[in-house]
Image (cartoon, rainbow, N blue to C red; front, side):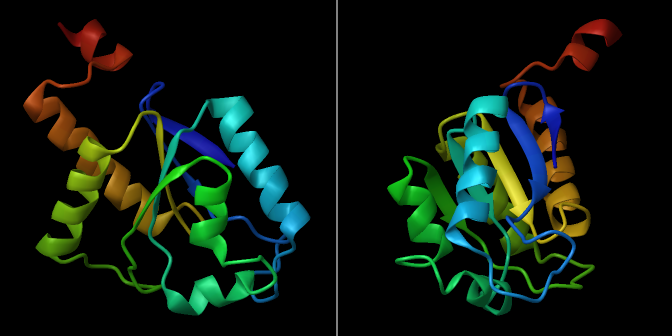
Length: 145
């Protein structure tokens, strides 16, 4: 479900969803289980949500939508909508992802729909920027030195 990119600093994953069905409404119970897994299993404090308005419509059963539901559950949230199937990110979008990561309390979870394309690219970009800035050390970086 979630994968560490930078141990205890940055994870990536997919959005809360009902099983393998990507195109139906997601229940409050499903979102609650997803949040519990993020908070207790990974101690996630913040989320960078990359899903677009088309995917956010699957959360209409929540009292105020997905993003506000995250906030109501004590998570800090940045929303940077990137269309599904988008292979190329704009420089502006990548800059926004990096700035969000810098600003948000750690650990941060970046998520798109499946946790593969958009979140993987965003997490890789953050990891490269972290290495260049030297702000967060990863175990793999320590072994190389």
